[in-house]
Length: 77
View 1: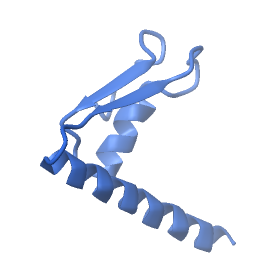
View 2 (view 1 turned 45 degrees about the vertical axis):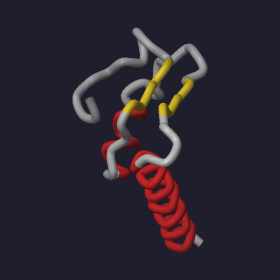
View 3 (view 1 turned 90 degrees about the vertical axis):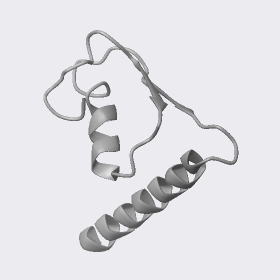
């Protein structure tokens, strides 16, 4: 669902059950809902079971996003 779908008119909730390791796919999937024309506040939910790989994946995605934001800030500043 990361590419080619425009979902802003039909939904405003994203629920992740089994998160991808790929930050681009993760961001793109959410961007399909949160984009121009969206009239509602977008809510993103993560279903993560304790003591599973999903906890590791969520932590890795958070670190990847932080690294990406730090790089963009360094390039713009």
